[in-house]
Length: 551
Image 1 (cartoon, one colour):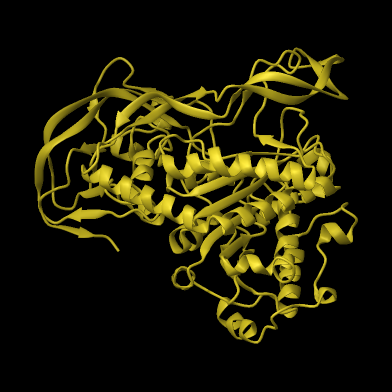
Image 2: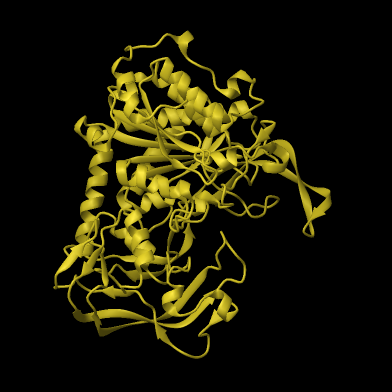
C-alpha cells in the first residue's frame, strides 16, 4: 500500500545512497514483453517496490478520482524534499512530468515508471539539480476501463488492452484546464501548479492522425497570450536542441507535432489548437515552460515507450544543464507581466482570436498513402503503403492574433460572481474585494449577440460573445471583486476573463448573471434586438478605495 508523504520522510532518511540493480522492479510493459500496460493498482505496486528498494522518492496523493482512486504524485529528489519551499531553499529547479491524461495513450505511463527506477540508480545525479514531480497515471478511472486497443484507440499499435480517453466524469481532461470541473484537474491546480509552481511541465501523449516518419513529435505552448520569453525559449532553443540530440545519440527521428489535411496532396504541416484548455498551453499562460510529447501511434509499443523515455531523459538533462537560465527567463516573465498590468510598462495587445503562422518551408517525412476501394464519409479510404517520402511543406507551428484587445489594468466582477472568483482562486490568481464603493471610467462591453453552440462539448453549450467596447463611468459597489493583471499570472487573468476570448465566458460561467442560458433561448439570444452589458468590466486602473485581498 502507498505510504503517505509524512511517513515516507523517515523511510527516505534511512535510504542507502545507491541501490542494487537487482532490487529494482520491472514495469508491467517490461514483464509482459510489451504486450500489456499497467493497471492503476500495478502502478501503485511498482511505486511501493521502489520505496522498499529505498529509492529517493516520496509518494503522496494529489487527490482522488470520481471513482475514489488515489492520484499518485511522486516527488523525486536527493536529498529528499517535500515542499516547494524546500526545493527553493536547496536551489533546485522543479520539473513536472505528467502521463496518461488520455488513458488509452499508455507509453508515457510506462516510460515515467522506468525513469523513476533509473533515478534510483544510473540517473540519480539529475536529482542534484532537479526536483522531479511525476504523475504516472493522471487518469486512473480511464486507465482501468480497459478494453481492446482497436476499440479504445483505433489504429494504435498495441498493447492488447488499453484504457479510455475520458475520466470517470466522461470528461477529456486535456480540455478541462480552464473550467476545472474534474477532480483530477482541481487536484493538479491545487497540489502541483499552485503549491509547486513547476518551472517545466512535460505532458505525454500518443498521436492519432497523419502517418509520418517520426517516432515522436512535440510542441511548446501555443497560446500567444502567454508571456513570450518562456515559450520562445522552449520553441526556439530547447526543442531544436532536443531534436538534434535524439537523432545523434539515439538515432530516433523526432519533429514538431502536426498533421496534413490532404494526405494524397499535402499542402502544409499544421499544429494543434492554441487555446488554454489544453495542459501545455495552460502552463504557457502561467509564464512557465512546457512540452507536449506525442509518441507515434503506428510505431510498436516498445518503440513508443523507448522514444518517450529517451525524450524525457534528454529533457531532464537539458533542464539540469540550463537550470539558472530557465529560472532567469521565468523571473523576467513574472516581472514583465506584473509591470504591464500595473501600467509601468506598455500594455500589450493580446489575442482573443487566432490564426496559424509558419516558420517557413522545411522537409517533412510522410508515409505514402493510396486510395482504397471503399469509402469513409463519402471519400475514399486511404491505405498506408509502408513507403515514405520527404515533402517540402510550410511548417505551421505557431499562432498569432487575428483579433486582439489591449491588456487592461484588471477586471471588475459583480458580487454575484462568487463561483467565478472561487475558480480564479483555485488557479492561484490574486483577487481583491472592495470594501467601499468605487466610481471610475471603465470599459464596458455591450453584447450585441450571445450565441450558444447547439452541440454539447464537455457537457456545455459553449457561448460566443460579440459586441462593442466603450469607455464609460460606472460604480463598482462595495462587495464587488477586482482582479488585477499586475501579478505574475496577469496573462492567465486575461485569458480567463476577457469576454470575447476562449475563457470562462465561453464555458457559461457568466450565463446566470446575463439572465439567460442555452436552454432558455434555443442557442441564440440578442441577435437582432436588445443590447445589455456583459458583467465583466475592464479597468483602466486599480480602485483607489480600501480592498480586502482574498485568502
